[in-house]
Image (cartoon, rainbow, N blue to C red; front, side):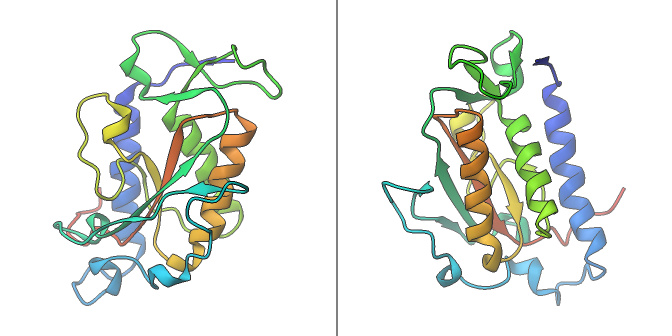
Length: 196
């Protein structure tokens, strides 16, 4: 199944998701704890770092500087074990696709990161986990369309949900045969945003 989505849509979804998180919080004042970062602590993450079985994750990369709670938190990289690579959709200049179930590895060798993010987001929400944006993650320093600089991820606001989120990302990467990585950003909200 071929699909094309303009890269601008990813940025719009990320921006709107961040703003709607703030608007739906009901409290945009600096007194809101999420203005300073996520709820909970890193100690709540129980998924083993560098495991050889189950989800394979790196030590979370923590960032505490930035103008909003969305810049403060941690980025958890979840490694896939397939052969397909994630790309920013407009980076290749060619059509990229989402692999159909049980597709051969040479079908859709490059998969759009936003498609993975959308699927992860759907599964998180189905489990009752609030999604706090998608796109550039905590600690990211994006350079153009270079996927490896984006810390591409789906955001959550509470460390208590980190293990479930890691498991869902791992599940999607396995089902889609992704050999690259995708992330979870455990972060606060942007209390400086003005809702649209």
